[in-house]
Each structure stands twice: as C-alpha cells, then as structure tokens.
Amino acid sequence: MRALTPVARAVRLVGRSRRLTWAQAAWAAYITAEQGLEIALVVFAYGHGGITAAGLLAAARSAASAVTAPFTAGLGDRFDRRLVLVAAALLTSAVVACMSLAVAMAHSRWPVFVLAVVAAVVIPVYRPVQAALLPRLSETPAQLTAANVLVSMFEGVGNLAGPALAGGLIVWAGAAPAFAALAALSFATALAVSRVPSTPAAALAAGVSRTRRPLAGFATVASNADVRVLMGTFGLSMVVWGAFFQVLVVAVAVQRLGAAEGGAGLLASAAGVGAILGAIGSAGLVGRPRLVPAMAVGLIAWSAALVALAVTTVTVVAYAMVIVTGTGLVLMDVVTFTLLQRAADDRLLARVFGVLESLMRAAIGLGALTVAALASVTSLSTTLVLVGALQPIGLLVAWRGLSRVDRLAAADPARIRLLRSVELFSFLPPAEMERVASHLQRVDAESGDVLMRQGDRGDRVFLVKSGTVEVIKDGFHVADLGPGSLVGEIALLRDVPRTATVRVADAAELYALERDEFLRIVTGDVTVAGQADAIADARLNELGELQT
Image (cartoon, rainbow, N blue to C red; front, side, top):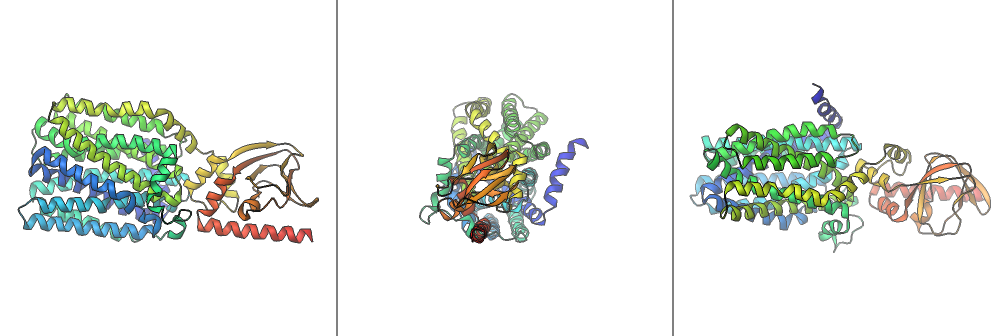
C-alpha cells in the first residue's frame, strides 16, 4: 500500500480538475487505439512480406509522420487545442475504419499499406497538441507532473491493451475485426476530448510573424540548448524503440520463442505491464526537484533488458525483459515531457512537441529500417546487443546537458509563492510560472541603495520579497512598497524612461527579472497582457494624482 501512495496522490491531484480528467480519459482511449494499430500493421506486414515488408512499412510511415508532424501539430498553436484533438481523433477513426473495409474486401496488401501511411500523417497530431494543452489545464507544477505521470500510466495501459486487443482479434477473428475495433476506440476518444474546455488560440500564436510560424518549432529547438539535449536523448531512445518494437519483437517471438506471428502482439503487450509499473514508480517524481536521475536508471535497465533478450530462449524471461523496456520508456516520457513543458515557450509549445513527434517518428523509422538491414547480415543476438548499447552511450554524451536542464527546471517553491502573490503573474500556468522563477536573480540591497533612477532606460523589473522600497518622483516621496510588490514595470511596458526613482528604505531582499524575459511573459498571454496594461494605467494614474 505504501508503494501506491504516490500514485494515489497523482490521481487525487488530477482528479481535482474535471477538465484534466476528461483529457486523461480521451488519452487512454486514443493511445490504446494507436498502440493496437501499430502492432496490427506490423503483424499484417510481416504476414505479407516478412521482416523486410514490416521494416519498410514502418520506415515509410515514420517518414510520413516525420515530415508532416511539425506542421500539423502547429494547428494546436493556431486554433482551439480541444477542437484540434477532436478532429484528429475523428480522422483517425475514419482512416482505420477504411483499413478494416480494405482487408475485408481486397486480397491485395497495398490498400492497407497506403492507408497506413495516411494514418501516419493524422495520428501524430494528437500527442503534441495534448502535451501542449496539459500545462493550460493544470493549476500547479505538481499537478502538471501528476498529469504527465497519468499520461504515461495510461500509455502503459494502452501498450498492454492495444497490442493484446489487436493481436487477440487477429488470431481469433482476423485483421478486419481488429481494425474495426481500433476505429471504434478512436471515435470514443473524440467523444471524451470534446468535454475538455476550449483554450484561447489567439494568445498561443502571438509574438511570431505569420511567415515564420510554420518553422517556429524548429527555430525554438535550434535556439534553446535545453530543448535540444532533451530531444536528442529522446530521439536516440526512439531509435531503439523502433528497432525492437517495429521489427525485432516479431523476430524474437517467432524465431526465439517459437510463437505464431500473432504472438508478437502478446509479447509486445508485455511492455504495457512495464509501463504501468513505470508509471507507479514515476508517481514518486511528483514534487521532486530532480527528474533526470530516474530517467537514467530507466534507460540503463531498458538497455540491459535488450542484451538479456539476446541470450535467452525462455518465454518467461523474454516477457520479463519486455516489461523492463516498457518501464524505461515511461520514465523517459514523464521526464522528457515535463521538462520540455517547463523549458519551452507556451506560445509555441504545440509546435515544439510537433518537432518532438517528428523526431520520434523519424527515429522509430530509422531504427526499424536500420535494424532490418542489420539483421540481414548478422545474427538476432548480435543485433539485440548492438541496439542495447546505444542508450548508455547516449547518456554519457548528454549527461552534462541533461543535468543542467534538471537544475534549471527545479524552481525554488519560495520563488513560485512570491510570483503568485504578484497580481500580474498570478494568471500564469504552472509550467510558465516555473520558467519565470528560474530566471529570477536574487538581489540583496541595503538601506539607501538606488534600484532605478527617474529618466533612465528600463532594463529590468524588481519583485520585493522582504523589506521596503520607496518611490520618489521629481524629488518628492510618493509611496512605500513592501513584500509582494512589483516595481519598474511601467518603463518596460510603455517603452519609456523610468517614471520615478526607487530607493531601498531598509534592508531588502528582492528578485530581478530582465527586460527580455519580462516582455516575453506579458506579450505571450492575452490575460497577462491585459492585466499588465491595466496595472500600468493604474500606476501612472496614481503617480499623476500624487504629483498634483
């Protein structure tokens, strides 16, 4: 029971929000359909051309996803994210239903293969837009982490239920009923996500010119070292995932365990058990300041499991090792998505996750294509060992960068409380609040210190944590400001010289926020921008009245 306590806490945190609950229910249905479709297509392709056909189809689907995902996911920054999710689920349902009809009515494999590529364009829309939506639905950083934990837990359930459902139906009834069931699940997703409230699309696309919006996600990745190192580590893991679950899982099931082709679905579904266990373990990350060490442990265990599969023919051991791979994937997902939600700009978050989706699909395809070629020239055991060695090497290369991201994302709770006490910042979503907190610079000031002079150019704002500062205009004392006050914002908001001098009245502890970061905040959110204008107008009116 003690081990379940973190899970119960995560469930309670998410359960406090009805909108998060509906989002999680929709995700559970969608990921089950997606994972079931993946294994159904692998089995279908393997039965119509062997390991080469399976690898080539996986590569074609991944290429289609990789090319389109950064642009289709950008719809989540241009339109209501809920409506984008509903549309993605409905289109997925329609395409998969057509697959079912194609299998039932045609003897050729090509209609299914073509529809599989079409699905690879539609399906990647959902994950990045949902990941961009969660920070808007969450009320606190802990609730956001809890939401990501449950996303991974449901993904584990989907990894278990989807392949089991698809594999079981293929064995007992054939491919057509399997595709039909997965189409129904996608339709159920649309019904559930329609209950999630709307998000203000106008605020999400602000600050980026129309001509540059399609590539804004790539620009963010290129300019943000924290985002780059997270994506690089995640991409390498997806190469390993694609190599095993798109190709090698069928070979292990058939060649090593002597199972039928449909048995590959049951073997792959064991990853879902691992994902559930990983989600239970990752629930302990809620509220913790450091996330990367847990991810590293999961990736190393995942790699060790692949090496173990290279030397065993025992069915129970093989299933256990696949469970371990699922656990490692969940830890990678929770940490990567949570840190990206904190590190990237919310205005472009759907696009950033679109780039991640593109990277994931491309990496999966690269893994499938490469391992198909590798398996043709070397043994299955050697292939598994080589694939298993990739992630430990990648961790060694990226460790310093990952540690830096982890430190920056672990915002001081006291700073977050201070930000929430300031009216202007109280409207920020939790991930954005953590980002701002990480940019605050502590300033210790003594009585008489001048923070800013009237007429100077504004380069930063100050938040008063303790002590008192006095506002002086034209040589006259006009106000005293204490803890929780924000000073210096008018010059930045109106792009004018400092309207007053601010001097420390007694010893004070303050936090400074640089001009660029402050303006990024107040121009990137419609609610915050409106509040900032109202505060600036009120402050200017006060100064005018006091002067007269």
